[in-house]
View 1: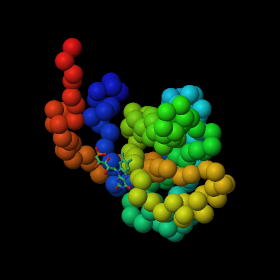
View 2: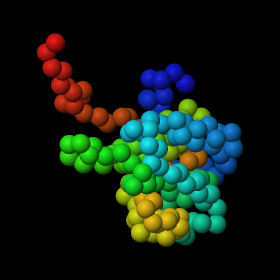
View 3: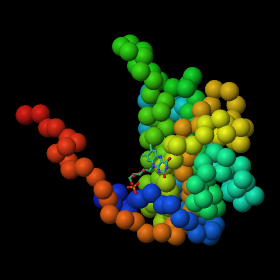
View 4: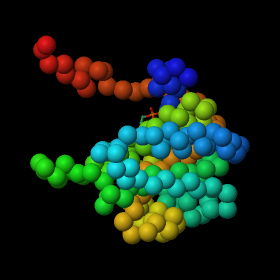
Length: 171
Ligand SMILES: Cc1cc2nc3c(=O)[nH]c(=O)nc-3n(C[C@H](O)[C@H](O)[C@H](O)COP(=O)(O)O)c2cc1C
């Protein structure tokens, strides 16, 4: 898909068909995530792919909205903060979460390109996620998305005008 069409096409899908995700499409989406840039190229992330069938109850403990378990797959992007770059020279600001967001964005845009639906999810229960995904110490769940074919349609994009968001300094 052409890039600006891809950006227009992505939306938060909150209803999914049960149709399986072809393995080739999943691999394409995961490869896009793998190629994401990260601070100092540390790649301080891990991706967990979770088939939803038979795990609905456990997944609902993580995020209770019904559509979360409608898709055949749920994906979690985790960070390993100890591996991540931080701006230690100045203020110590950690960048692991920024890296995770870029990974998820690559993954989501690749999914859109493959005709798949996704929805960023941050409002999940991290303790439940840690337990259900059996995450080892030092690995933090940061973002989830379902991955499957959309069963809804996009609405209008509600965004602030660019003038409220961007300031161009005089040249
Ligand atoms: C970091 C992040 C976290 C989000 N968390 C949730 C969430 O927990 N649940 C949800 O339904 N949507 C969540 N969203 C989706 C946003 O509400 C959505 O992207 C925004 O309203 C714009 O709509 P659009 O994605 O359809 O363009 C999240 C989005 C981002 C970027």
